[in-house]
Length: 286
Image 1 (spheres, rainbow, N blue to C red):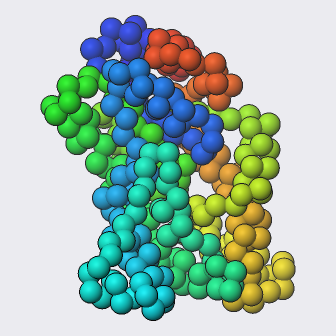
Image 2: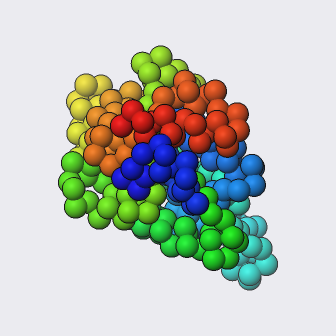
């Protein structure tokens, strides 16, 4: 544990925290609040993935689609236009669009093998971006003078680490440099996340074994061929199962590597001082 007690946390000259948990429970809300307060450097793992590690794949995918349009093809081949991703902390759509969904190409789906390839690229990129965290802690201090550092991790962090392995390289590197904090949601939060996802299903990363099992089960239960799958129907069907798969992994990360705060308490945080108190309470309860 990077901070051994609430007193240690309060007296620390440098506060370093990584937030993890399901998307939609307040990781980015807290990160933005702390950054806007002026004393915290905000490191977004998903932004790092989409720029440093997946940026070229994302841009090439845009160009591949543009090459299908005669006018754009001519302009691209003569270097007359420039196509790039405009990914931001608040808008990660280019990354999720590249990740895609498997199924019927007429409905925007990807062949399952291609989908798996992109999932594998995302896994490698996420691990690399997480391992970049210590360097960005130093960079934030050396370049910009920030003592405090908040890492906003992606919801899939629990899928690329083994929280039960005391020698897991990613969790070891993170725990040696900052405090890992799980934002735990309630059953009502999970239900709301499922309702929200059902309205607007989005691409997401899955652990390979889970994905293969879910895909095989979906094809069997619905008696459908891979090329006929409705991509949105598949990711809707999979979402609640994915949340259930992730929950014990998040819990193990908090139990073995960090502390836990409640999503309801996160919603009450209105200032960096409130955040300090919430982390101190979590350390006291550890």
